[in-house]
Length: 117
Length: 112
Image (tube, rainbow over all chains, first blue to last red; front, top):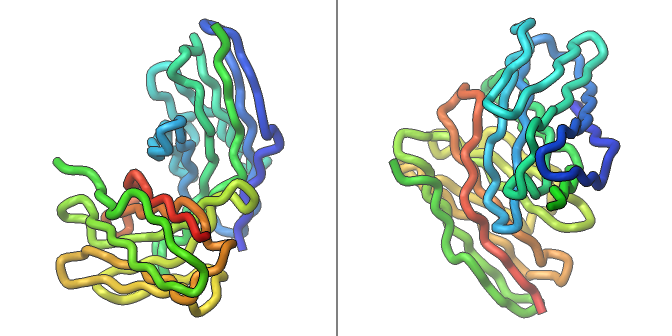
């Protein structure tokens, strides 16, 4: 079974600074996807960024980028120029390639990020 | 395009009662998954439906059940409610084989 670990329960960063959230996972699959989701106080889960395991290039979405190390099974999220609106719970998630037995989405425990003015 | 909708948004029940939650996926999405979110256990997978068939199930007791209709709308039911069932229940939809799930706003269930 796949597991996802986020070793930082809470983090804080000053507005406009850069912060990196860590995520490691364990799997024997070779074909899978990794995600970072954000859950602000409104509780709405929002996709931040996704990475296909077969792609060497790290995904980037505006101020958000990942450092995907497949051999090390590491998938960290870097937030540049942090904004107050980035304050949220961040979840790392793993999904193996879909089969007839389902898509098997597994979430980490989350990291609570506070952006300080 | 409308997002995933969940009804009701809030529910208060007492122990021993049963409850039904509803989820309408994004148009065209045929896969619906349900998650339970609590402060202590985090996000836990309940089950996934595709084409009215349960494809995958998490480690929850049989009191938790679900179904999916031909229009892809899904319901989950919890019978004989316990205090520990108090949680935010999230529904997510996706294309089958798609690599992204879209989440609804959740239903906050409180069991007294």
